[in-house]
Image 1 (spheres, each protein chain N blue to C red):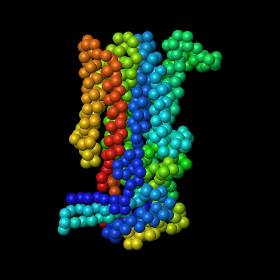
Image 2 (cartoon, each protein chain N blue to C red):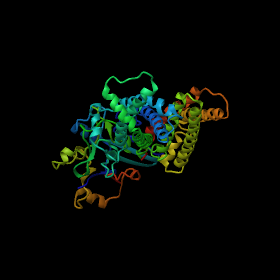
Image 3 (cartoon, rainbow over the protein chains, first blue to last red):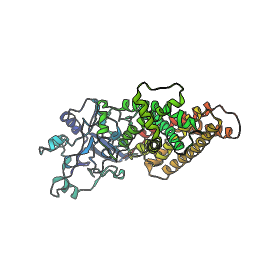
Image 4 (cartoon, one colour):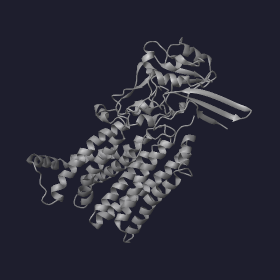
Amino acid sequence: MRFAMAIDTKKCVGCSDCVVACQTENNVPIGYCRDWVVEVNDGTYPQLVMEIRSERCNHCSNSPCVRCCPTGASHYDYGGIVLVTPHKCIGCGACIASCPYDARYPHPKGYVDKCTFCVHRVKEGLPPACVAVCPTKCLYFGDTDDPRSEISLVLKKRKYKRLIPEAGTNPNLYFLI
Amino acid sequence: MKEELIISGRMNPMVDPVLNIWHWQIPLYLFLGGVAAGILFFASLYFIMGREKKYPAAIKWAPLLTPFLLVLGLAALFLDLNHKTFFWQLYLTIRLESPMSWGAWTLMVITPLSIIWSATWLKELIPGWHWKYPFLDQWEAWFIRHRLILAWIMLISAVILGVYTGILLSAFNARPLWNTSILGPLFFASSLSTGAAVIMLMAKSHLERNIFSRIDLMMIGIELFLIVHMFMGFQASTQVQIDAANMFLGGPYTEVFWIFVVFIGLLVPAILEALELLGYKIPIIITSTLVLTGGLFLRFIIVYAGQASRYLY
């Protein structure tokens, strides 16, 4: 099993509902966020191209954060989801420095925190909160090892890119373009 | 024109707008650990080579400082942790892939070793020194008998400590400035140079001072070579590393790096040491202080600039 997420940059309108849903679902401390929306504008008027991406932890298959963690607090969990065990984390910040996506942050309580792909929901068969609330249905979540899953089908049909694959992280967020 | 914005707003403390997770504690530790590694390297190396009579400052006097340097460094590391009460988790596991795990264990070996090493010389160095409890005398005698083994373990752990401080940073490919294998040898050369500077300062004989002055001069030469090499490597690499190098070649870190690290920390002491070798009288305190200042600035600048260098996508 290999959980991944696909983000349709053509359908995303940048409403930031995913961000608020995540903060509510996961009780993210005020002033922090586990996911965020990036808008890229390229060109000069009237030849403008816009891309909107809802970004979060890439749950990389070759995670630098898991590699550099000195205590094993950062680890691969259910379906390849990258998680942090708070009571093992010493808050050294190595994983934060190692993440090319800056997807992690130190929780005010001291341990390092990040997107969990809402693993507590996924284990119950529910989609992550951000996917569940997306009003344009531009987020796809599922198992890429299953060729008949919704995400596998959309990745077969559509062109996609991944962010900084040259960092060698083998990320599992696919941006449909 | 390409413009990239986080429209949902992201201002995670210590991560945005520029990564700022490591503050003064980490570079201070890298410096203190480096100096200690340098001193212990020379102490064990020259002890193994049987130069006990010739280099008393390197083998006996300077190591007395290392327990303090290491404990201060460890304290700084502890202060840096965000989840302090869980620090013991470091010692429940060995993670070979994580340089920080290597470092934690190396410190666990070298800190007690530095204390034992210093303690075994105390009777010789301080006349009238005696241990309060008789079992300490027995332990001391045992350690003195096995000093050669101690020296070998210390030599190896000093090399690991000196190199790992650089590897710790170079293992992060997310920060292009750090992601160069030059950083390991550069920090090791700097730790040997700063270690030699402390030994120079404590040396009483002209011969010993002269030898460590020469060693220091050689290390400075190696550092300069590695720095030039590092920037050449960056310039020939990918865009992110070219950008990282440009922070030092016209960017915000240009003045502070070339003035405080290269000029004041490397070139000036090298010239002073060369003049001294030619027979001029140069107060050793000036040279040593400059070398130590340069080493401290090198750690600070690399740690801070590295956090500002990043991938763009």
